[in-house]
Image (cartoon, rainbow, N blue to C red):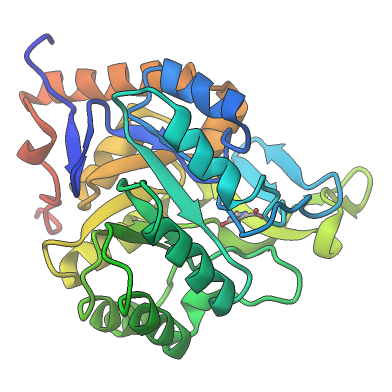
Length: 313
Ligand code: RRO
């Protein structure tokens, strides 16, 4: 297994291992991000940051089920300066990706201006898909808002930028979104965020399981893997080849990651399974992915990335 490489690149960032945390999981504090960096993760993503820190929605706001999770965190975070300082002060060879999620377009632009004038030159991920800020729809479902945001951002932003997208469910949606994204010098997209506004019901207590928004929240985990596979595949078929793809959604094994990479993912993020198992999960995923590659005779991820076949008779 020694000559198998699972390294991957996005922009100028090199990931020795292709797994990192999905923004929002195990990454609100410096201590958590350090634990991820100390594990066999390829790098770390910060919690989506707003200009000013936020406490988030009332508790309980996260719940694990057998097949996944539901969350309505409501963007709790320490504020953009905290994450920029963390990146500046952290000595690591691994990439640290900065996630930004303003609650308005004006805030997103202010945050990105701050990033533009900072020393940070890694990947910035603009989250257009938070489903849980009360009263704020997901920008990623509004094509005009995506276009307006990108037009305004690329007036001044010259650093590597990615977009965190919500899941789409109709082929026409992929056509519409890809045709907008292809007009801009994006470094990558990240597909998908949680499947927004699902509902988990506890039959015993006959109630919902999280407090905010009457129990509605973003669904993650095994439930959403086919949606993630479809989004990665559909965007890989439509986006300019220079725009890389981070595949996120329902990965809990090396086999799940193998499938996402077959669909076109460059690297893979894990959310629910990281919340369940902690950062030790990264070593397991690396090992499982390498074992699959060894069994199939693959030596690097590009041997099979994006090579999903049509139905075989
Ligand atoms: O904080 C959250 O509630 C949250 C965010 Br910003 C997001 O992008 N996706 C999600 O499932 N939860």
